[in-house]
Image: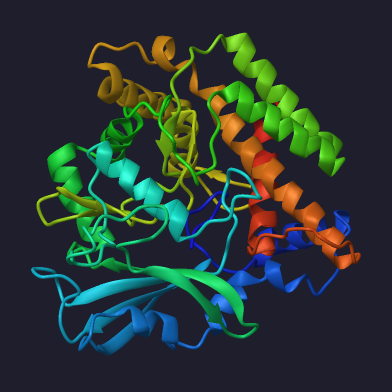
Length: 411
């Protein structure tokens, strides 16, 4: 799981953030209990650690699950499986099972997360030279072991999951040997100078893959920041929330005023940290994992999100752990990694401020759109697609985004 607000950890709403979230949901016309689709953190916490028949049937003949350990209690179920033998020759006899309970990411509410999105992102990331966790079956006479968006050749599928029996995507990935996050910080500090520089170098490498003429379905996609803002403006109008529409207008004005240069669309991971960038004990990247939030858009959104979560902590009212100088340094590090050591970050990317505001507007608008859908479901409106999510946590993150937009003078 993850958070779209001031921290990167999952969990239920609590404290001041939880109270603010409850007020926001009430103002949006939502009543307790929320629709079941909006309570995925609780569902994951209470999920029985039982493998479904669909998952067990996918394993090669003779391979048994000797042990399973729950390793995720956020927006998805995650299990570390110990197997009687490796899924593929030469691999560790361990694997990671993910079961998608939440379907909501930061791009389009109507494009749910799942194995097809993740596998397409993994394929593109590898083309960019970014290592990822494998998901392929061993080759056979009729199977080249090459996974695609149809899932053929991969350990993927759909299963019915307790307690309601809803259809959930699942995938089994190779276990990637790596050191723990705290140990990774030490190793990366020794080799790259800082974990931020390490992350930014690999982010720039991913973004350098120009996707202008590449079919990236089923990933949500925006070919320019203008197209993305047009979409957010349409969602904001549908929500009939005046300050949400004003946020989009303010971001557009900031970007136009700054005269930001255009960049080609790129694959964005949207959850960069050392828990997802797995390293060995020499500080070398082994795999970037957790691609469920991936989408195609302006790469500066990916960078801005990392800048915000690196610098600010807390929900609703955030604590600044750094300064504008720190943000500018991340911006410069990215420009150097992407365009060369002498690159002028502001000339090549534009200033960071408008992009930080853009990323906050994404959280606010997408979350508001889902709140409106949840209220429609509660009112008995038929035919509404309500993506599974944890709406309490999203509401906290929407209030956090609103706080930042006020801080930046957009609201």
